[in-house]
Amino acid sequence: MTAATRVPGIAALPDGALGILLPVLIGSAMLAATRAGRTIVAELSLAPLIALHVARFAGGGFLLLHEAGRLSNPFAAYAGWGDILAAGLAIPTAVFAARRLRGWLPLTLIWNIVGFADFCSAIFFATTSQPGSPLRLFHEPPGTAVIMDLPWRFIPGFYVPVLLLIHVAIFLHLRHVVRSRRSAESSQ
Image 1 (tube, one colour):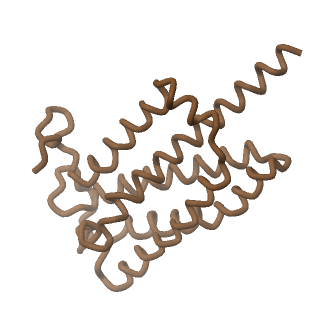
Image 2 (spheres, one colour; image 1 turned 45 degrees about the vertical axis):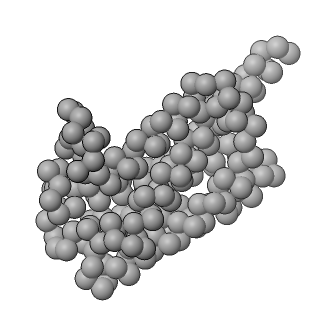
C-alpha cells in the first residue's frame, strides 16, 4: 500500500488509479497555473502531440487479452475500441491542425474530447473491475489484474498519464487560440 492510499478521502482509490491521476493533476496545475506552463501551452505545436496518439493502437491488445481469457469486459471492450478510435482519428486530426484546414479547431476539440473521455472510461472500468478494489462493480473473471503485470503495466504507469496530460495541454492550447482570436477581433 502506498502512502497516498492512506490519505483520508482517497483511500478507496486503487494504486493504479492514483498512479495515473496524481501526475496528471499535478502536471495540469503546472500548465494552467504557472507563467512557464501558460507559455508552453501557447507555443505548442498541436500536430505532433496529436500524432503521438497513434500509439493508442496498442490498446487493441486489450481486445486480444480478452479473447485469450486474461482480461474481462467491460474494460477490455471500452479501452480497446476507444483507443483504436482515438488512434485512427489522430492522423487526420493532426493533418487538419497542422495545415489549419477549415474546421480544424472544432475537429481538434471533438477528437480531444473523445480521446480524453476514452481514458476516463478506461480508468473507471479498470478500477471498477480490479479484483480486490473496494470500488469493484464488475465481477466478470478474471478482472483487470493483468494490466498491472509487465509489459502491460507500462500502459497505466506511463502512457496513460503522459497522453492524458497531452490531452489537457491540447485543451489549454485550444482555449488560448480561441481567446487570442477573440482578442484580435475585438481590437479591430
